[in-house]
Length: 374
Image (cartoon, rainbow, N blue to C red; front, side, top):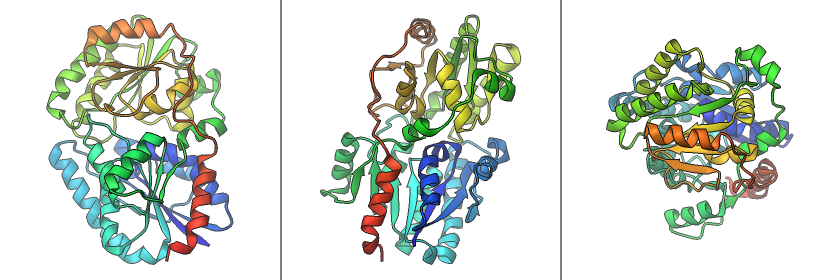
């Protein structure tokens, strides 16, 4: 048996992991041990551990370390507390794992991986080599890559960047494509009527899906950025139904969260959801006219639904994107203008992140390399 650990800290990474988790669980040669932490255990962020349990996964362990605040001090303290608690977790459980998966670029994921280094655990990093210059997550992502044994990237440019970062032609870097796109291929989405019954939101109306997080590099500008977004959404609500997913636990996240709550109170055509879950989120994306925000979901998944994306600001700056992604600054006039234009057009191109069967490729690598784990 290959003893595989998997670190999941938020709704975002869980939604991407899901097809791999199902494949690992179903494989009789693999013993999957899920480690839950971060906002999964925060009732303020929707307590998404419940979604993991509802999907039939029983966590091996949980580590609670998130603070409610969103100041630089609160984020730094959460990072330190996560590393501290994982030092105890790894001490008690280091012999339980042959390999441990991590994904993405969240600060709490970086902290959990950093705490594993003295224990010489083998980390497998998914979605390394990417670049997001407007988010401090860019640094966390690279730190996880530098700490990892295996690397599963989503496109060839990211493999090349990792080779540069690691300083050698590393044979343990594999381009497998995007896991989340495999998820979309296999996930039954809700009908418009099922979605309305579950969320009381009618997707028969012309809808804009909005997923905006704060910028965590130039975070001192988030007040101004948020004001521009609020002006744009209030104007667009005269023409569209606006569905907002609430921001991550990032520096200055409360600025956007509070603004969105005020918009909902003032305008019945604006809805805000704390946690859709993967199936409902992509159902909403499928039936929306346009995606607005600065989330990786717009960059990676939206093309599969033939949707254009207004990518706002610099949070995703540097990330490889397709022709469906329209880059805009945090300026309300431009957001309104381009939203009205691109909501009328369906994207006809392909998705640059797609490759078939990434879970199968990842598991194939694990089995092929198992003799080298000890």
